[in-house]
Every structure is written in C-alpha cells, then in structure tokens.
Image (cartoon, rainbow, N blue to C red; front, side, top):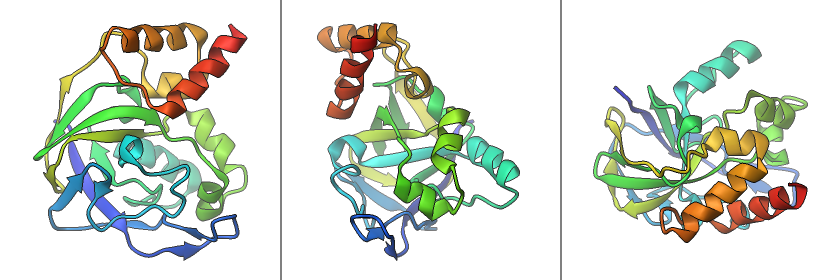
Length: 212
C-alpha cells in the first residue's frame, strides 16, 4: 500500500550565497496532522517565490525508494525533507505519476503538475559538486502538485490515485526527455480538457516543439 512516510515543513531558513540569500531547503518531519491549503502546507515557506511555490507548485513529494538510492550512492542518510520535499512517500512511484493525475491523501486531493528542476541552491544545500547533473541523470525528480481539495494529512495516511489522464506522459519521462511527441500529447490533452498545464510546462513544451 502506498502511504506517507513523513510530512515535512521548513525548520529554519538558512543562508545561501545565491541571489536570494536564503534557502528553505531545511524541511523536517512533523509528527502532527498538517493542514494543506491552495498555497501549500501550514507552517511551510519558500525562500525564492519566483521559481518555487504558488498554486501550481504548492506541494512537493519525493519517494522514499528514490531517496534510498541516493543515500546508498552518497554513503549517507537522506532523511525526509533533505530534498526540500513536503511529502516523503513510501510505495508510490512519484516520478512515474502521469502529469494531471490526482491523488487522495488523508483529507486532501492533489493534482500532479510538473517535475522538480534541480538548481544551484539545491546543489549548494547538498554540498555535492555536480549534484544537479547527478540528480538529472537518475531521472527521478519527484513531483509538484496543486491542491484540488484542502484538508489535513499526516504520516501513515494512504495514498490513492483517483484519476489518471490517458496521455501517458509521466513526470520522470518529461523531466528526462522533453520529447516533442510527449509535448504534443500534453497539448492535445489540455485542448481536450483532460489536464491543466502550468506555465512552466508550457515553456518546456515550446522548446521541445522547436526541436521536433
């Protein structure tokens, strides 16, 4: 059964030498129920709101199984919240989720919007040279979600996929390839009303179609 291994919110803002000057990639598990609303988890924050947060990136989830891959590769623990994720899942193929599919978790319904793109802040936070390339190469970026129905979640809640569009373009596939055929499939699905694509996905679609 797919379930939440942990629910994480920001512990503290940390200094970062980038343009913003701080990072919120210090999220840690909470043992209590947490309310999720349209802009994300109660008690959470994003330091760089130009590229993170907002209704289309309200919640970020990462799979325990993929975190364990990196823990083995790095030779160190990767506890929940290390990647800045709000939800650490167990038994759910987060990067295999189809863009636009909906999950019911506790009292919340979430909709998959886009993959997480690694940035310099993420690399500095991990303290691993070449981290962005390693993260891309593995091809499991985790998924951002928009909130369809607000409510409470907590560790141990079951994760249920309640709707999945037919276009078949997954978070991991789109992140890895940005294939022109997938770009057209996403546009066709949006035109048919099966999915609502966020602006960031549209930008990558435009780039993909220029190539093919």
